[in-house]
Length: 103
Image 1 (cartoon, rainbow, N blue to C red):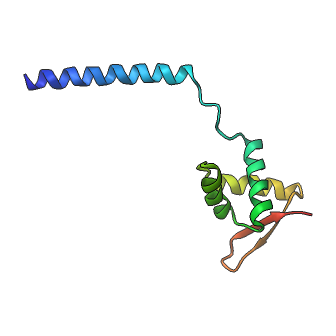
Image 2: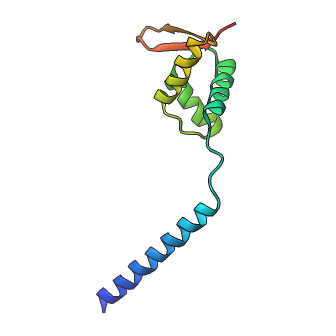
Image 3: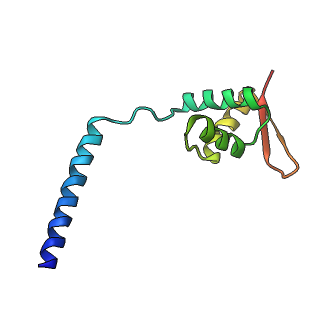
């Protein structure tokens, strides 16, 4: 009898997962940050806090916007912005890149 109960529970769980998958696919998540939105978040943080590392910006994005954005993703956007002259970059005492908005 125990195996029967366990198999019924497993089937029920699998049906629930299938229903949830269908439900979530009906309502796609559209609140994720795009590259442009991420750039806006970075600019807002640099405007507010000044010179910051990619890691610091990542932590601040989590605190202010409840978004988990990896520091390496932020670093990629910042390098692109630096190449366009939108931000300035320098090394700090720990040899980490520090970015701030160009004037």
